[in-house]
Length: 102
Image (cartoon, rainbow, N blue to C red; front, side, top):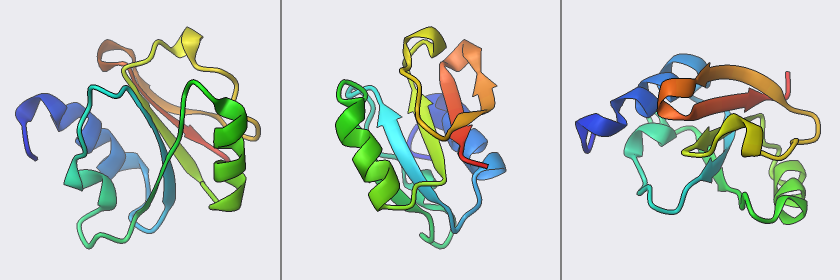
């Protein structure tokens, strides 16, 4: 991990998102990229999403076959509904939420 403060988010992704999954990222702009999101062998595909423009993001979700969405540093109540996805895992203390389309 690049820094210890990001350990909870990296651990959550590693524990619950398959290494070969397509994962959308809806992350506050103050966060910088962590290599852990790609998986140990860099198999996981990442798709950046825009929290402020969910209509645009919905097209990217469908077009890229996104299976999981990682939301970080947004309150759960503020996250707009994501068509076809439900909350899969959460860590309210760190504002980490993973949504799944399964």
